[in-house]
Length: 160
Ligand code: PNS
Image (tube, rainbow, N blue to C red):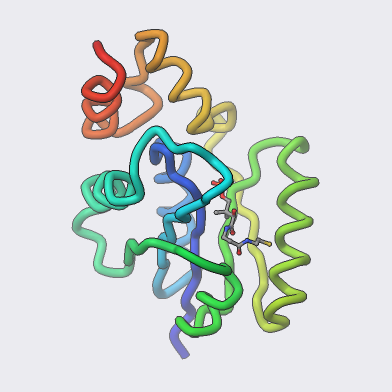
């Protein structure tokens, strides 16, 4: 049996924290589908296509990873792709309320779907896409927070 997981998120932009979680999930699963949510409730800094492209650059060379757009319900996407696991990163207790609510709702929609929470490396625990965007907007150094290609994309979008 092939164990397929989905790692969903906004990835606006992908950070070293996301990369860390994806690589950890490959130890547990045969295949990981990174699903980039359209997310109509947020106004993203990068378009869906740009977010997918950045993930492809950052994760290239790993045949067990697929990167795709997610436009619709995660539970339905998981069902059609025969995925039985959702991977989410858990950084702090403050993440837990929202994450447990989503996990339970996804299970309600698709009872075979289990959510597995992974903890990132300690030095990446404070990291989030929103902090990266804010630091880049204020022209701070993001080189220890994101892949160089993502750093370059942030500079092009927000200035040096
Ligand atoms: O990186 P984020 O913004 O925390 O990711 C949130 C995401 C994309 C995982 C969540 O919004 C999601 O699953 N969106 C897909 C639509 C959906 O299924 N919504 C109901 C979730 S219970």
